[in-house]
Image 1: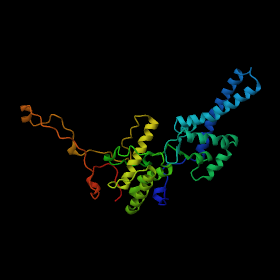
Image 2 (image 1 turned 45 degrees about the horizontal axis):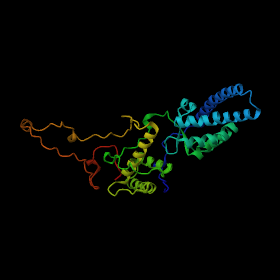
Image 3 (image 1 turned 120 degrees about the horizontal axis):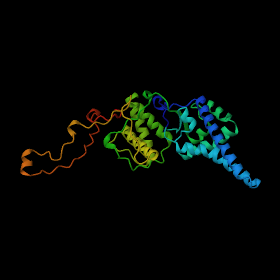
Image 4 (image 1 turned 180 degrees about the vertical axis):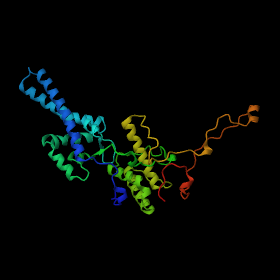
Length: 319
């Protein structure tokens, strides 16, 4: 993708965790892991006393890899980045674009953590966190992850405006597997700050991001759709897929209200539902039923129509 240098679009709205809170979380995780390792070791020694020395060494190595390496990887994968220590201090491991981590992210973090945390007693991890601008250790750098704070004031959270309702499901067939995390992060940051930018700058950035996104997905930007609306619709489709993957087929319910939350879609007053048998009394008495005209979805307004003529959706593309 092309380089984005505008300051309003590159400010990371996730709060990276500081080194003290991360160190305390890791220390708590290590205490729990070491206690579990000692319990497993004692059980193995008592149950394998009759085996030869080679078998005991093999079992000790297997227990080390299973508990001290495989345990944290499994916990971070199943909890989507929340270990016991991170949960206690309000931290979470996320991808660079803010999404939940997967097994490959936890695997890279756990494998490199053996060297920079266990074998070097955390010296390498602390040094890398102090040098990094966002406090990332080597495992985070290679895995493309970031440890962030979850317990922040709700009023400061940035919301991605939802796309117009007539775009729901329009991009359900797009292949989003080739889109890198950095591009998703740039799109998300632009959507949360596009109203704060100059209209011409915002329009140019939307067109550049839409072109990059279309090139990665193999689809072209519709001519009758503003670039910002295209970005919002594709981002909404990606978030819906992530929700179905993380929480099941039912997804999750978006929080209602809250400071700074985008306005929900309200149908026009003239489109209120009416009973099916709402024919005039004369027709009902004669038993005649007039055929109902099929209800057609509202046609998309022309490109030059001002945004105020559309229903309020909380999303307004730049002029």
